Image (tube, rainbow, N blue to C red; front, side):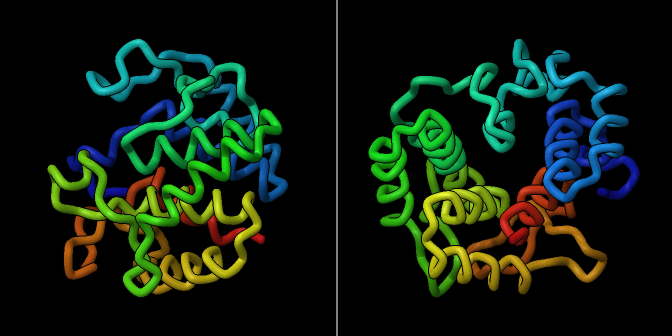
Length: 196
């Protein structure tokens, strides 16, 4: 999705796995299977060195209800917004709604509905950017928690932030202007947050 030569132009195994989940959600099992034939879900991730030792399906598996390979299984919290949302989704899959709602409430307290962003976690603050994929994950969680007001607000922001060519740029600056290029994970997660 990114320009030739840009780091986002690489084919990451975890991104291919995530794309296969989206295809399954929209009823395109044929495309999901094509991806999984070329990139088996349990293959080592190639986003190195950041995800050395991880499998391509150990992060996004929770988005298709698969808790077994989840790398944050049994964690109760995280200081990172994306992990907090993923852990909440994990607890929902485990039918532990109270644990999920604690994480939801924590994320919700960090949410600015006017600007449409979550208060920056440590990783975001180091870059001084708002990652759009974390907002999309919060939207996916809002859908599962059934907070339709928050979901509608997030969806409105995601639609406004969509690039004219169709994808979503990776980040938003402090003034909420786009930063980066459209990347696969951000685009897939934003699309999932927009699905009915």
